[in-house]
Image (cartoon, rainbow, N blue to C red):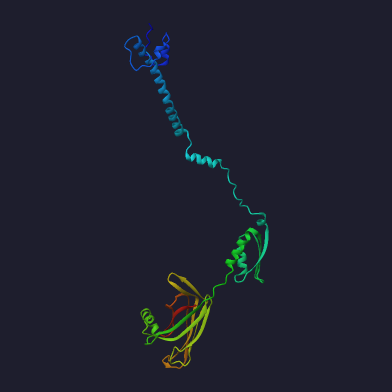
Length: 331
């Protein structure tokens, strides 16, 4: 009779604790659980060995899953990211050699060139070129500029001269129309274009009437001076005319958002007026007397507008000369 086997044994270690080795009949497989000894008990006694084999098999089955789990965890925590791989690729890539920005030997060599100046001032262009590290030698008589500079700088110098050496804009002409009005206590008549101005003058100076004694046209170029002299008969009873002069130092054209205007710098008006002296010390006389009148100012005249420039009172009489100017630019 065989010694019973510990049925609680589920591992190889526990099986090894059985003192007596298993018989051959115990190794026969059986699906039934033994309830006794003998042949059926022998069949039942093979279950512990089968359970161990099943346990060992399940462990073998679980090993690949565990390996997959470990590999997945390693990839999550230790595998390099895509950014890291990209950075590694950038790091592994050898740095590209930067293009050399240094000028070549030929570009560093000094070259000499002579430039002909056609329109602009030679000295003014030469002064501008001295901002470059170069040797500049102007010649006003020949209207040329000799330059000694590195070859790399020469194209910049040529472009600078090309931009500066341009023809000066054609000078524009300025045309002034000067109206010489005489204000007095007598009624007078003026041209229709002056009626609006006369209304303002009557309110400003209190004269009853105005009459135009002369109209002068003065033409000059932009920034250039102008001058005109004239004769006018202010006193109808005097056989001799009076004289006057109008001059300005320069008529310059200015433009702004409102349009164009002409600035008259140093405008001067002078008049020598002859007036017949009718009574002197209660005695009639036929003598004439001279009166000087005039004024000077700088004035801006908007193109197309009429501007009252000044008033010159005639001494000893209740009369005055008033100057009205309108201007336009001739293209």
